Structure formats: C-alpha cells, structure tokens
Image (cartoon, rainbow, N blue to C red; front, side):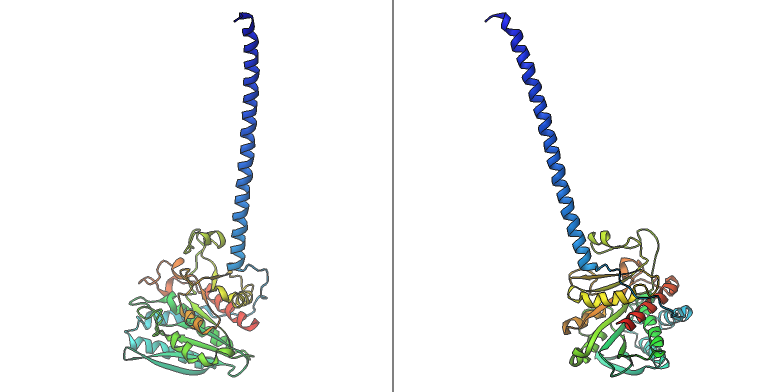
Length: 353
C-alpha cells in the first residue's frame, strides 16, 4: 500500500467523524425536544385532571349572598358552650343526669326563642335518651332540618365537639324567632352521636330519621352543625385525609367547610352560595364518595339511606383541631367571633334557599 494515500484517508476519517458528531448532537437535541414535549403533555394532562376534580368536588363559584346586617351575641355563644362543656360535664352516654340537664338547657332556649318544642324519646340498652326538636313555621312549604348533637365523647368536655354546634343551633333559633319564616324549619339537638353508638341504629339522628321517613318527599334537606368553633390562621394548621386535597383547599384552618356526598352536589352548592358573602368568613365545600374519611363523620349520614339531601357544616374537626376527643377540648380555645359568623352565614343560607 502506498504511503501517499494515508493523508487522504486521515482527512476522510476526520470529515466522517465530524459529520457523525454533528448528527449525534442533532439526535440528542431532537430527543430532548421530544422528551420536553412529552413532559409538557403529561403535566398539561395532570393539570386538566386536577382542575376537573377541583370543579367536580369543590364546586368553585363566584356567586354569593349579599352581606348580612345581622349580629349574634358573642358572649351568649360562649355562655352556651361553657354551660354544656363545663357545668354539664361530662355528657357521654353513661351520664344521664348531665345529658338530661343539657336537653333541658336546649329546650328552654328553644322555647324562649319561640319554637314549638317536642321531645323525642327512644330506648337504648334499657335507658331512655332524648332528642330535642324545635319547629318554626310549621306546615309552611318544604321542610328544612338543622341538627347538632349535644352528647360528648367519653370524659371529654366536648366544647368544639359539639357544644359549639349546639350553641350555633340555639342562636339560629333566636334568629328564626325574630323572622316570619316562609317555610318550616325544624331544629334537632341529637344525643348518642359519639362512640360506642356512632354509625349504629342507636344514634339519636337515626331515631329522628326513622321518625320523618314517611314525610321525606316534603323535606328539602338536612344541615348538621358539627364542630364550628375552632379556627387558626397559622400556616400548616389545616390537614386533609389525602394529599390531593392539599392542592385544592387552603393550608390555613381559617375557613368553614360544607361536606356532602357526591350525588348531593346541587344541594351543597345552594347552601354554599347562601353562606358565601353573608360574612367575611371563607366558605368551601366538598362532595366526595362515602369512602373518603370524614365525609360521613356526623349525624347527616343517617338521612342518606332515605334519599334525603344532608350535609355537614364543620371546622373540619380533627383535621384542624388537634384536641379532638381529648380533655383539652375546652371552651377557652374556641373563636366565638368567627362562630358568630358561622351562625349568621347558615341563617342567611336558610333565608336565601
């Protein structure tokens, strides 16, 4: 082989090597572009799914009620919670004397507010327990029911859970007493919501649901007040049963939640629109499957089998209040100014509906 050919080969090899290198770089760039586009498509798809989920379960809306001119006595709200959580403590299923004192307290306020009061007695384990029912506008239009349980868990004071809900119910009674109701409003203070009877046929709300079963076609729905007194503006004070909800809902526990089942979205939305704007308290809603932890954690659950719309209005319980079912669930920890806004918001929603 001639040595004179070697330089040409060297030049050819260098040219070919440069071309290959350029092609490799081009291929890498194309692959990067394709990967980037694929990633953007995935992110866009995930974003679309998240927005769809948000719209479906949270029902965001710009519609809201007008600002209310009503006021609620903050000190009186506190006095209700203090009486139930301190004077009539404890209020568990074994403490019949305190439960009866609690029902007498509620009954007295319902009567003072102008309600037509009825006591619904039922028997569990050979003991007589009682729901307190107060009615306004009897016989007018489709009935709307508001409820809250007055018993507490074991030896806990149960200030937020659920003396707060009962206090709200009492103050709504006083607001109703000053209004010429154009529909029937039934207020119910239940007993035996807490363990060991929770999710059983021994619950007071189960007994009440059985009582109204025959008139269900004339019932608009049920709103249950379940823990409405604990709020926090601290970052990270609000938790959720699943990570996805952290993307959709606030990080601070300074809002009120309306909680319902997936098939009751319209009823939930109507209540939400009625509550939003009535005060400056933020109001959110969620309609989820019964398998989602927390969706059925109160008395509203017992109306679902009857096909009656039923939701829970709540501060989200143990997802915010870390003293849930503990001895530290005391009246001093609650925010009565924001509780008053809850009462006004719920009342204005009733009027708007």
